[in-house]
Amino acid sequence: MKPWPWTGKSPRDRVGRRLAAPQLLRALNRTRGTLLAARLEVANSGPARRKGLLGRKGLAGGEGLWIIPCESVHTFFMRFAIDLVYLDRQNRVKKVRSRVGPWRLSACFSAYSVIELAAGAVHSSHTERGDTLEFEPAAADGNP
Image (cartoon, rainbow, N blue to C red; front, side):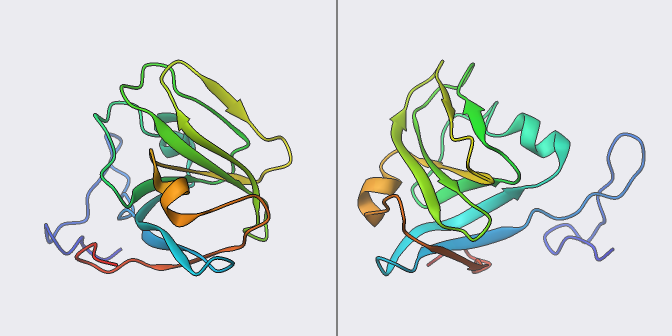
């Protein structure tokens, strides 16, 4: 495993296993020609999916978390509202929810994954059901 560039070390968990560097992607709405997220973390392991956004104080504009696989989320114990975009396996939008506040549940049982975004991201990108998203590596500095 390569060391993380900002520390020069390969981090390890409490058991001593090496941890993978967080994968950052950009989410583009190909149907609308808009940017949905400039810095999208991928949560595709059990611990990362379970933690989600818990413990964070908020998301900056352009930030988000893509949870794979996932068909439902909760916002229990969260401190801020989020937008949700549910996707199928072909990255087509199955369902969109805007400004989901704390202590809520949301599900789309036909979805394969969900993207959690800063509140307002869905509206500003004009993302709707049926749109197709595309993912690419994010710029290292986080700029679009």
